[in-house]
Image (cartoon, rainbow, N blue to C red; front, side, top):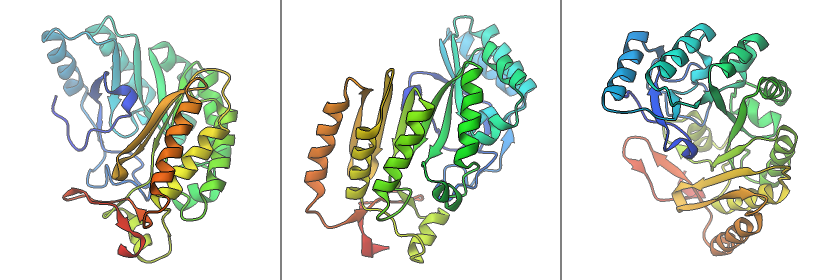
Length: 304
């Protein structure tokens, strides 16, 4: 597969076949994100997409799960998505699920009839970048939605039969607001009932607008200890009437907590308690990465 840019998909899709249908992100304005900043968004020609499907089939491939890349494939025109799903089923007859990233704006642009047609075509999981349950944080991070819009559009896709999965970022509300963000985000999830939650704890990339705000002291980032404490409170507050898969990453301190709620809740909370105790007496650090050379060691608050 010829793939342009960084491969970006959630851990739940690691065993899926990834089919690129676009390059970059059609929105590409979130202050914390640098994945697609260097790419000019464009949709790939249908001939290229079909050629990739044919190549995989000729190698003996017939995957059951397909993930469409890049940043928000659900933003493609409905007719184009239906053509792609038709090709997938033609080349991969055993395919039973087509999943992709989406935004609230992507969903809002589609009628209920379009959503039902896309679900009938085999699209199953939609991954939404919810990030936070606080409206002022969504505004500051220049997300494409507010909470009311998210509630409305999630209700629409669930009514159409899609499974909704959520990306969040502990620490995104900034220093001193972890408890507030945990309560708000838990309330959002307890109402919307995602099937999966993936938490990529906030780290600051040198090329991100949010990093420049941190340098200017207009945004004060939370410490890794605060992020762990926020995550623990969030998990404690989540109430589920069915299984909820959770996967939380803190890349710069190499910590990960994952499991299925409610069965694994106490085990996950215990693991977070150990991590919190381990970092309680550390010098406060934040997570920073240099886009050009890869991850940097966690930096002190004053290192910015």
